[in-house]
Amino acid sequence: MFSLLILFLCGIANVLSGPAISLNLCKSGDDVCTAAAAQAALPLVLAANEEIGAEDLDPLFQPEIEGNLSILKFKLFNTTLTGLKSCTVDSAKYNEEALTVQIVLLCPKFTMHGWYDIDGRLIVLPVKGTGDYSLESLDYKLKVDMELKTIEKDGKSYRNVKNFKVEAEAQTGVTYDFRNLFNGQKDLADTVLKFANENWKEVAHEVQEPVFSAVLKRIIKNANKYLKTLPIDEYLPQ
Image (cartoon, rainbow, N blue to C red; front, side, top):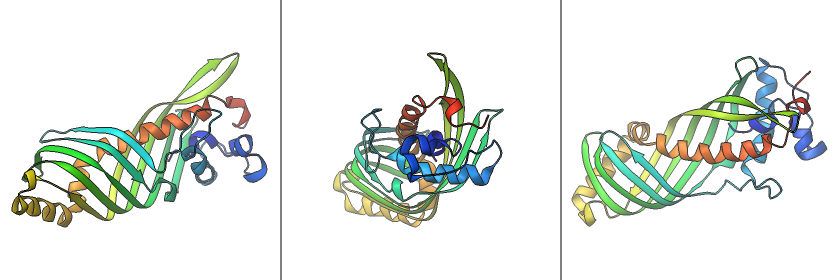
């Protein structure tokens, strides 16, 4: 998802990690080469690099995530997400003329835990509470569309991610555990948790966008740190 941003089109890996990765330069529209570049670069984007200020993103610690949905308001505090390093690139597309990138990731498992505060309606049921939470998901599909921009510095041109949009789809299952719902009223809490776990796909679709947007911002921040060190002419075919 985020890998192409540093390998952008295959040859960059040689700049970042020397002979450990050796790929030919990719041309715009060469989806096979682009996907291979993305897969090769993914571990680099997610790992810490003190020289450029990139941080380790698996596990990823997020101090606060806010969801301000039409019928549901929630905040997640001190959230830890693990599983990004297990993701693989399913496909990738790069368009040099339009300056766009699309990467599709398949992620076999995510886990999250932290502290929550929630109030509103979860699709059809009222929900309210604050306390510890955890969740586990299996087989997520993430489609990330990015718009790039070109920046000039010291007579050289660089690429950066200007905007992004992420679409996430839970494909196999999500298990939710929110403790102290309704201030510990067990009957009400059990009803909501049973509904959420039996309707995991619909629930995920309703509430996941703020979470994945927050995660992507951190990943793209790492990717942009790499891109700012790599002039375009070092990795794009001439």
